[in-house]
Image (cartoon, rainbow, N blue to C red; front, side, top):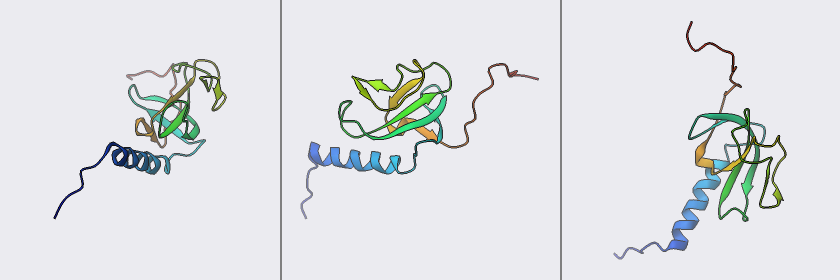
Length: 110
C-alpha cells in the first residue's frame, strides 16, 4: 500500500481547515484572552483577511492600549476601536471565555 506524500497545498488546506474549526468557537462580542501575555479584550472580527495572509484571523479590541492600531490594517478597516487597542491575530492565540476586565487598582495581595 503506497502512502501519498503530502504536498504543501495539502498541508495548507489542513491548516486552513484547522483555523476554520478554531474560528467556529470564536464569535464577535466574545470576551477573550490573547497569548502571549494574557492580554484581555473583546473579539471584534473573525474571518479571512487575505491582505494579511492566507487563512483565518481574529480581530481583538484590548481593554488596555496594548495593540498596534484602531482596527485598520494596510488601509483596510476590519473593525473600529480606540487607537492602540486593536490587534489582529491567528485564532490559535485566542481563548474565549469569562475574562472580565482587570481592575488596575486591585491589590495583588491582601
